[in-house]
Image 1 (tube, helix red, strand yellow):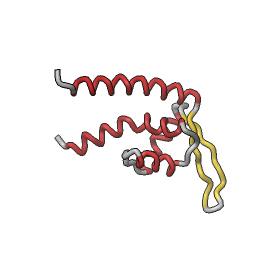
Image 2: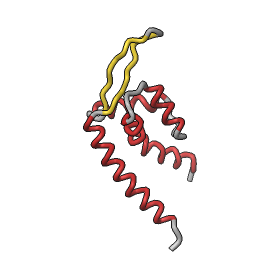
Image 3: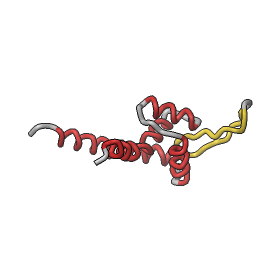
Image 4: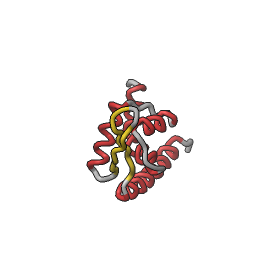
Length: 109
């Protein structure tokens, strides 16, 4: 089994959860989201992030607004919706349960 592929699949599985977590702190531009994910050692590129943001927006978990930029085209800033906050709470509960289960299975009997 390819360990790098397994690790990449694990990271992909939590990206939406992490994006919502970043945006619960406040509105952010995609490069800010990427920076926060990289700081947490989740390496993400724009080609991965934008489809996730679109899906989360289409699901009603995020919304965005355009802001004019003095140094180029308008920028799209994302923020979490109330529905997204509720979804994040449920994901956090699931994460806590999974984390406990994984930790428990790794402990000696």
